[in-house]
Image (cartoon, rainbow, N blue to C red; front, side):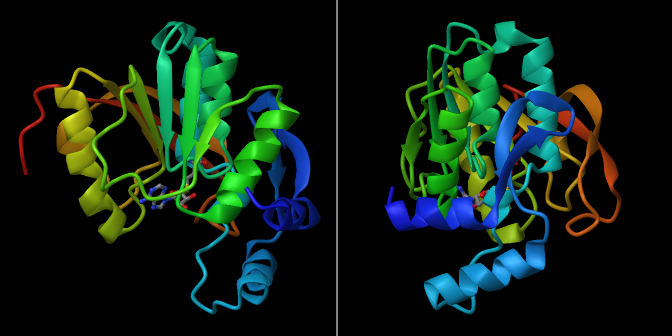
Length: 221
Ligand SMILES: C[S@@+](CC[C@H](N)C(=O)[O-])C[C@H]1O[C@@H](n2cnc3c(N)ncnc32)[C@H](O)[C@@H]1O
């Protein structure tokens, strides 16, 4: 990942403990709008994506808490963190004893943040900085999908991909606070956590975020 992207992350986000998962530290931002403006200026792109990587999203927080309590879900396993953002779920999986961890995100700043955050937490996931949804699902045991049902275009692409993964016997674990496009009919709830977010991004500072497992028999849409 480019050193300028890493420098940008360091300049605009501060390494600090994650609320509710205090043993994990991430580069997190205080103010989403000013950081978004900084991304637009840095990239010269007025349509640059929101800097998702600078926040621990409710869905990822729930997965992190779940893996802390249920290490067996990933311990000794090969784990792929889809839509990794800050790398929170990848780091939580490595901490819980995964034998290998890959973190994937389309945003180049996310890739830089994942590398920096992984290093700060003494973990070393492989980082994939591209859209993996056009590929076959990876050869892993577990896929984590933290907070990726927030917009229709992504939601439409991610479910068939996760379903293909499920058909191959991969354990698909999702975390979500009840976003609009969450496909509840194909998910089985396995845990719920009250997590701390921010009203800069969410309607409430605390949200109930749920952890789900993709049902192996989930009906085709
Ligand atoms: C709401 S954030 C969630 C981040 C993290 N999982 C968490 O829970 O904190 C969603 C992330 O999905 C990433 N994303 C969107 N489309 C993607 C795609 N096709 N492939 C990989 N990542 C994608 C975004 O860049 C963003 O970092």
